[in-house]
Amino acid sequence: MKLPVYLGLLHQSEKTLAASFRQVAEGHGAEPDVYYLCHSLADQCDAHEKALAPIVDRYGEVQEVDEPERLHASGLSETRTGPVGLLRDLQDLYLLASLVDITWTAVKQAAQGLRDQELIRVVEQCESQTQVQLSWLATRMKQAAPQALIVAQ
Image (cartoon, rainbow, N blue to C red; front, side, top):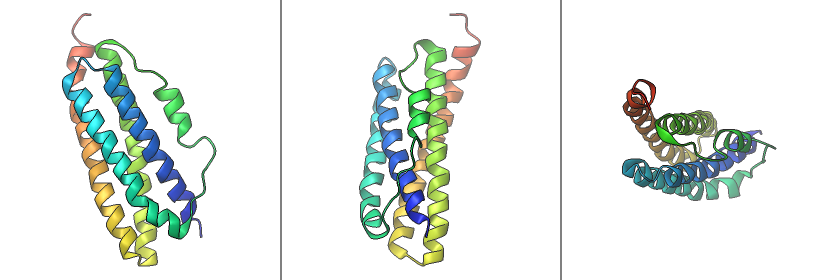
């Protein structure tokens, strides 16, 4: 069974996403909505990790080397400045959240195949919150884009 590989990827991805949300919050603290929402979304990721713990205890996890840390290291090693920097940092978060989202989808498929009701419940709750995270990121990028890309700096 290869589910432990994806549980490991999911566990590390949620941890990386939480750290990345916090990094963007601190780096763009002048934007109150970004600061507070990124901290809230990071807390959601922490809760996802905790919800996943009993599943990991049952099935185990395999940590893949450099996944998804390489995305965090190359994408969010530090926050950028200015309106374009905010847009780019939000885009990096969106890419990482997309990885988390599709990984939840794969794990959900496995949970359904295993008929593991506990795992299905965890996935459905966490997956829906991850989709809200993606929705907020997309909306915030739409809001930031005109200022960042059109208005002279």
